[in-house]
Length: 345
Image 1 (tube, rainbow, N blue to C red):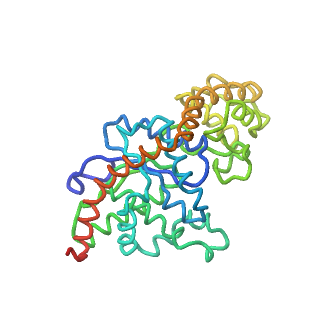
Image 2: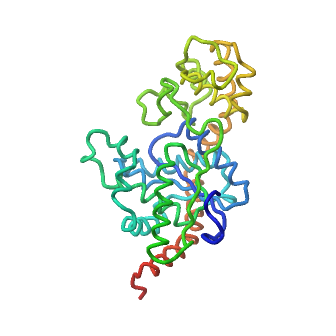
Image 3: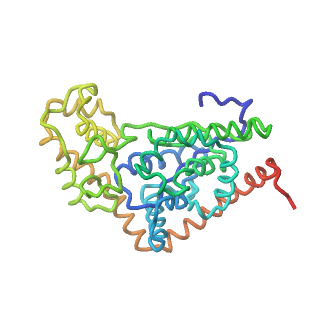
């Protein structure tokens, strides 16, 4: 941790992250988040991993589908190797303190800070006046998600670094405003691995997304072996052979993306991948990548399907995790209410 000293925050190390309950998960989620979560649960630090159903409704969600989407995200967590005995897995909305702390932080944060958030501009497009207030303020809820558990580290993608900076600003301003130095930590980002930002298989300049209208742009966690192999075969590439160095991938977004995916699935580096395949064309590389993707995802896919066929098992895991999360969250929100001067009764 770079700028957080014991004089500022003396609490325990904690790690927190979550994924929105909005649509099917894909390889980008697995490599950029799920695989990382399973590694972090072995660090010995408490790990909180939630399903962000409150964030999901910042854009319209069909109510009858939202609970199913929450279960699907939880199934992906479990299928990827998260162990409820090692990680606290829960739905965000099952812990009311998330919303309570978010309101307090809405009154601590500043409009100018939110005006600088680039993701709102990207998601709202040319019609921001039609966007929900929640979409505009959801980085504040994100800060509440993190600081409610006094998380010191947050695994995030590059596109979320700005929101984590906002979390740090809110934490620091709260600590200063209320004369409670060191009450909230200033969380640090955890950005590691060769595929922290997996791009579309059809456009190497666009992030792999569950909202992309083309199913060929992504490998879904529920895709079978034939579908995975077919999508890899049809992935967009260029005509040049693979280079000898990582620098040689610059200006070749599709090649760069496929090499990064291979490296992440094989738990190796891009340099090692290029050392093996340098000089070869994609006619040779794609079959190897398809084989690796199929073998790497087989167990995850099978376990996800098993879990989705037994929603009661998922619900039991979520209920137990929610209870553990509330045990940590409720003392924090009680303290915060006292600090800000709310009536205690």
